[in-house]
Length: 368
Ligand code: NAD
Ligand code: IPM
Ligand code: MN
Image (cartoon, rainbow, N blue to C red; front, side, top):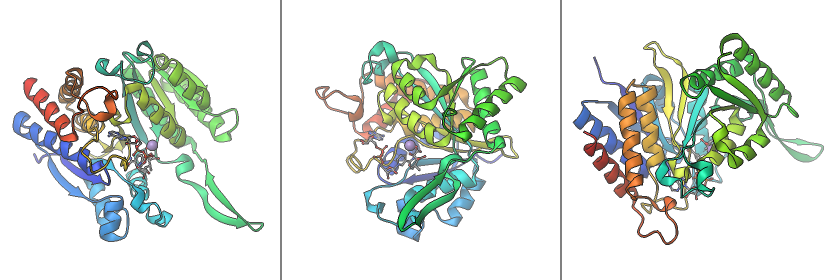
């Protein structure tokens, strides 16, 4: 049987820096665990624009459709800020999500014990935190029509449309309920049904799916603005949070700081199962290209490494190896090796991106 295939799209800014560490970990799995992947690499975002004049070449899109999983670093950066909207780096990422139909974006926020002191919140608020945000990723205001900048009554008007169909809500709700069943059995759905019709439909459909097939799960509903407040006030009340594309973008960045740093948060973007039973999938850190620190060896590679752990779990049925990699990251943090984003101003010399990768590989070796 051939090896599972991985397409690596490292992208821009710190994307290639953190992805280099993941590639060393992929090589480690081949050498030490006999777990080999057919890895290919290609361009996305600004890097693709520089080479091809588009943020995602059609050939790259076609490759992404064929592989077992895509690993993406990050896209964007100030060099591309003035480009026409249609060719901005972010459009490359959005095209991948849309055309691969990756509707369920899993963004786990877990506070490792070693980092509980580091969060900007009090230790007892975040210690032991383990929540999963399920963000709808292929619809809502990111893709709804009409959209654009138009002229009306001699002034410009910018339009985006929040639009959800019943089936779009149904499928992402089912993905979230399934996860809740494997986790703590609780799901909180967040929208703004108090002001948005799409929120009313969201709440109705989630309630119907629950009644039909998931009545064993404890379901609650919350307005998303209250949800943001509750995430900071008492985040451990949540198990799975289900929300739409735009609210999920905001709430997951907020949840990132509960774990200590945006540099810690991985994600899995999953679609429907392919012929081989595996879901279409792309794995990407939640953070962006971090232009303020790129090229300096400062980036925390953990979010990208933990995204590969999610690939092991959700695409390759290697749950035990995913546990091994997560435990390796946790033990490195516990040993005090940390990148600058996880250190207090007087905390000593931070580890570089490469040193963090070295330490994770040493911890993997030690786990054998
Ligand atoms: P960002 O996530 O790139 O950075 C926000 C802050 O977090 C910065 O201070 C950055 O230094 C820090 N940070 C992020 N990742 C880090 C890491 N791994 N280690 C240490 N520190 C880290 O968000 P931004 O500055 O708003 O956006 C920059 C660019 O990235 C924009 O072009 C944006 O569109 C793009 N972006 C891309 C993605 C993606 O590719 N998935 C996600 C978010 C933003
Ligand atoms: C994310 C990012 C993206 C989003 C951008 C870069 C398109 O912020 O993955 O969270 O808004 O979804
Ligand atoms: Mn975001």
